[in-house]
Amino acid sequence: MDPSDVDVRHAIEPDRLPQLLELYAAEWWTEGRTVGDVSRMLAASDLVVALVHRPSDRLVGFARVLSDDTYVALVLDVIVASSVRGAGLGALLMDAIVRHPRLAAVQSLELVCQPGLMPFYRRWGFTEQVGQSHLMRRTSDPRLIKG
Ligand SMILES: CC(C)(COP(=O)(O)OP(=O)(O)OC[C@H]1O[C@@H](n2cnc3c(N)ncnc32)[C@H](O)[C@@H]1OP(=O)(O)O)[C@@H](O)C(=O)NCCC(=O)NCCS
Image (tube, rainbow, N blue to C red; front, top):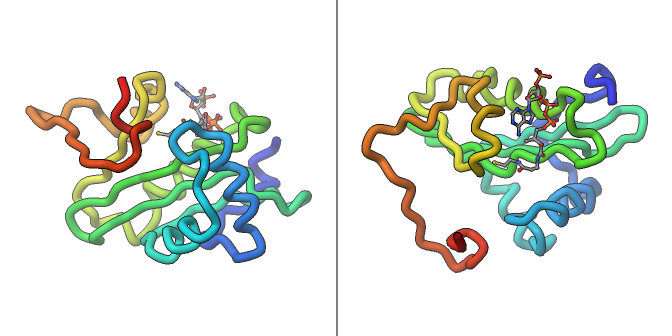
């Protein structure tokens, strides 16, 4: 897929929600999310990035950010549709996040990822050097705490 055929947008319109649920259904940590929960989540997210393939009007990538606009912003749910990976759309998502004016003055951008994705995120300056910090989590989702 040619990234020049893809628009970067900052909203998921209600009629595109099924396409987001489709992206979510394919990933281990988002599989099973419901329309109601995802609608509420979108309304409460500070920044969403939607990649829309213009010729087909399909959602081909998505990411979102929670932020206090000052000290910290958390990058979540970075997903490119599996059929179009490797074409630069993940880079488009991450560029749109790190260059977004709302995040320009935020001190720290944070994210959680699997070890295999660390080289991907290092391209945008993310580092696993976090001092003595450790991620701790309290969750009702068993997928997020299994080894
Ligand atoms: C991670 C993901 C978003 C990358 O999307 P993508 O469209 O394939 O990425 P791109 O094609 O833009 O890749 C950009 C660059 O990063 C590199 N890259 C992509 N995935 C990588 C990985 N896992 N490790 C190292 N480098 C990677 C590409 O080779 C490319 O390098 P290049 O510019 O030298 O060619 C995509 O693989 C995905 O959706 N994975 C499943 C969901 C997921 O696990 N998301 C992360 C949640 S933390």
